Length: 409
Image 1 (cartoon, one colour):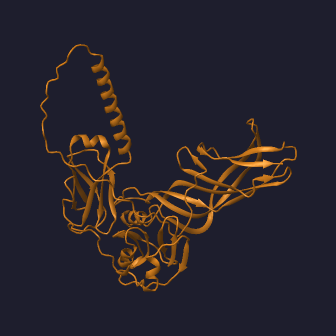
Image 2 (image 1 turned 120 degrees about the vertical axis):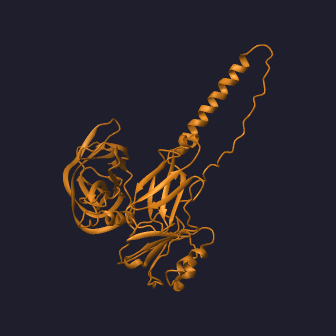
Image 3 (image 1 turned 90 degrees about the vertical axis):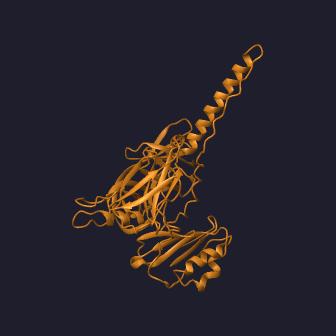
């Protein structure tokens, strides 16, 4: 394994040099990377609380004695090493604790043949919060994660994975829009209070306020905040989607780096471009009967994990580079079509599988291309001064564009 410590993230990560990762599960704060045959081939964890407890978790699966003290420590500097760690066992047990059908008072999950029955129970006002529910198998595989659309009603979800009896974990959590909804509700309540105060202050004469009987009711407690997310890792260590230029739909992204911020007229301006783009691609192996379950499982295991691929010809894109002066005048430096070399990929979305009669399993996948260096001559007649370097890629409309500054002398 290649073992890496990140001082900025205060996190240890280990990923296999040659083995494939087919699944990712968690055990007491440690994210375990599972290879073929169920062997642990890598791990990741944040150093928080008692770091030695993370090492004790790893001892269940790996012989970590040679570097146990190192894994339980932290440093102000990054570290990286190659180590050989022998697997202790070939099967990762389910990590669910107290597996019961009724996980909490808010959500119930029950396994049926090919399906999972989910019953969410909560008071009507929780629907205003944008609640979500998730259902996971005991080994950590997420079987469903979606917004609650029908409270107090059972919902049946297709499931292509084998689930042992009583081996489901379900929870109700606040959705991504919950904070915004609560803020809007609080603002609306504040407006109502202010209006009431103004009206009360404008009234004349004595006022008698009658006591209003208050009804009492047993209210179910608010669901707890979701647990801290698992450490985000990449296997192997690789690129992240670009942030300098982001298209309106988020599909195309680009990072730009200047080799020098000072260039003479008649000299060479060089840019290094790192381009990535999302698209619908076939993924995984589909059974002879059109069963996409295995491809879906492989997709879930690779979700949001960067992986290298053999370099191969990729998409062709049109790149245009402009220098923009202080008055907004544009001078084009280059306009060329370039075939890019594909070097990596990251799964971004896994649709529900078809269990029979399906065609190729199609996923949303971001493809990463090898950095491209553009060398451009600066015209001799270009006036000296400060310029912004701006890029256009094909017909993409940028929502985020971060031009770089360059001085021409």
